[in-house]
Length: 377
Image 1 (cartoon, rainbow, N blue to C red):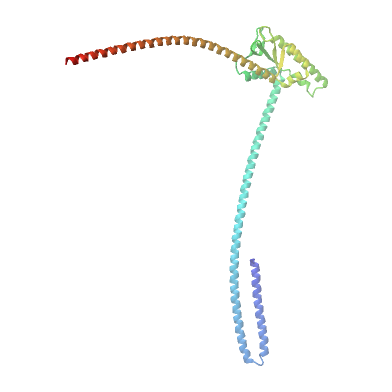
Image 2 (tube, rainbow, N blue to C red):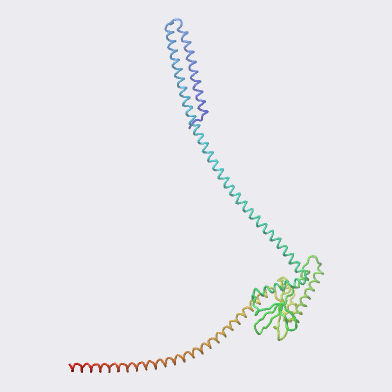
């Protein structure tokens, strides 16, 4: 294991102190020896003193040299260790900086993504809020429309026309709006159904006022029951009105449709007022909601398509009949041409025989002429 700089400094100081201690011990020992031999060996003592002095000087010089060398080595080792420590520190700092930058970059990226998502959510929330405000406005507008009796009637007619247009488009052969009957009554719409159904009148009715009162928490039980009776009476009056106005023998179908634009009102009638439903059947007035009317119209559309298919089949049969007559005429003409062609072929054969005979005669004449010429020579 490598010792750090502080440990090396402690070792160096300990070594220097140890050397100084040895020198002090040597000097003390030398003085004692000199005192012992001072009296008897003065000359030898002087020589020994000089020798010891020289040895001490040499030892001191050697110690100084070793100490200098040790200091240089220590300085070199410390410099190398410091350089390595500096490099290690720099590398670690660079690594830490890279990690910090990477973490900051990821953090910024994550923060940006989170901020973007938050902004998108806020935008959606803002859009939802606006939609809710628009919906609230629309609901208020619808409530204002449904509050007024005339506006309710207009609303029912618009919904009726929308259903008819979705089913039949703008085909005037299938239905008509605001159709005036012979007696001067105007139906909201009529369907031109195939026979034997005939023309079916549709009238829109929206009995909403007493229906709302039936379920109003602001009214007492007696008031709600009274509203229920009034609602029942409203339906009966409207059924009777449609039966009297829009079922005309010889002009319209034997029944008419009473269009109720609200599914809830329609369900209330069929679910809780069976006597009214039976009454409407007896009056030949069939109450329909947007859903049930669409079902009837779909069935009627199938009848229309079947009728058109039959009409096309009849047209095809007529065309085939005309084509059959044309083919018979073609067969007669072809037979005549074939007869003429056969006669022409026979005539050509006879002409060919005659031509061959003539050619043969010419050859005979030519041969006789050639023989006469040879005899003359």
